Figure 1: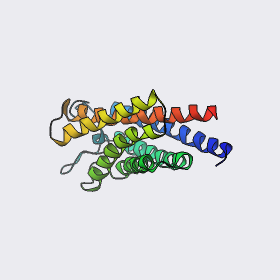
Figure 2: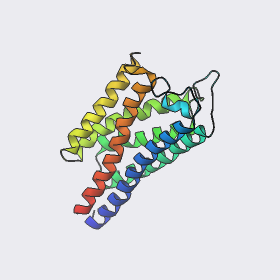
Figure 3: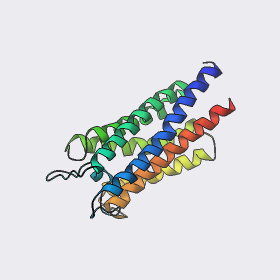
Figure 4: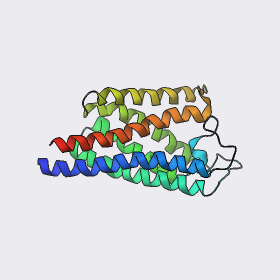
Length: 201
């Protein structure tokens, strides 16, 4: 692959991934702003913004539209970004979980919390593959961001592991945010890193 073509791929990937992290974070914050009283970051899951779990699911607008749209847009941007990352680096131990992460985020938006079977599958896919992607991105990035990425991935998987054993260290909502937000921050940083790498070619 020529340097010029690779530079174009990296420019597309870096831009999409950097913006995907921004959209995810700000979309969640905005949905929280419009959610009625009773929603707390300690006890409420992030996906409650789209719809709470069945039975007796609660869907609150405009929070649901904002959150679900945010996840769909973030997922699409990440999937496309992951494709261009694959074209640039072709490291399957990273490319596969990263692609699954994008699909998981997209699925979370398409199938909100009131969809009993599919939502948990996509949410778990997002968290597991996101943590693994952060760790395995060390195969294509340099220090010090390499070690930051590994730490972020370990943090996300550690809190996911604790929740899986019904030990929500910071409450259900707080624990989930310690899974999700390190991945979102890594995604934004990864996009910025690719843009910075592209500028050196």
